[in-house]
Image (cartoon, rainbow, N blue to C red; front, top):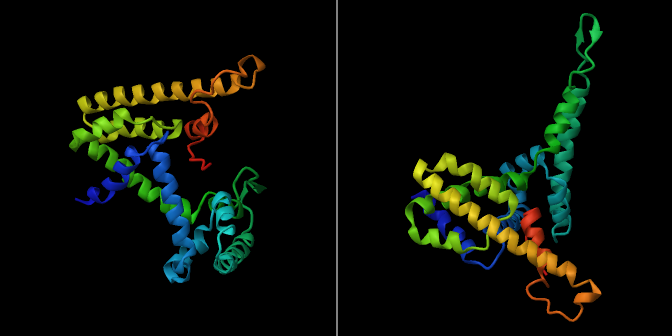
Length: 239
């Protein structure tokens, strides 16, 4: 089955000691997508056509800039900008629309629409999203087929708020009524229990800056801030 191709990374993520298995999967996807983008593939016609069209979001453009292959980035930028210049020159020649002899000032221009679409596109984000969707499908496939996965799910350290929402909303689409209710009860329990755990650690981290608690142990709060940022900003912070 096609789903089995994705069970290994999903199981590995749920076995890992992290605050959100889906954030861990996303981080690995991003690393792989960046390596793919800046590897020999950037010279392939199909990929170059896609980077010309989509380019990169600000976040990923910054990551690519700090990679070793700046020549590759420059080559992609040149052909992307060639396309943008050509497209915008053509669109900028379009005359504004009139309604009843007056300019329709509320209408979005072709230039504005093109730039808005460009600002919301990214070759790396798109590549990540396709596999992320398959990972979500795999989680529900495992939930339906693998009772051992139920235990992994129950015993993980929970999820960030962003991925909790994705699992919550996808459950009704992927599961039957009884399985949906069971999944939702467990998901809510795992999410809230672990959010409260991390927030208590953050609270104690704050208290440790109060002179009254100077001589008290740190407990589990020394790394509370990066773990808390995983929960709130759906990202893995490497120390």
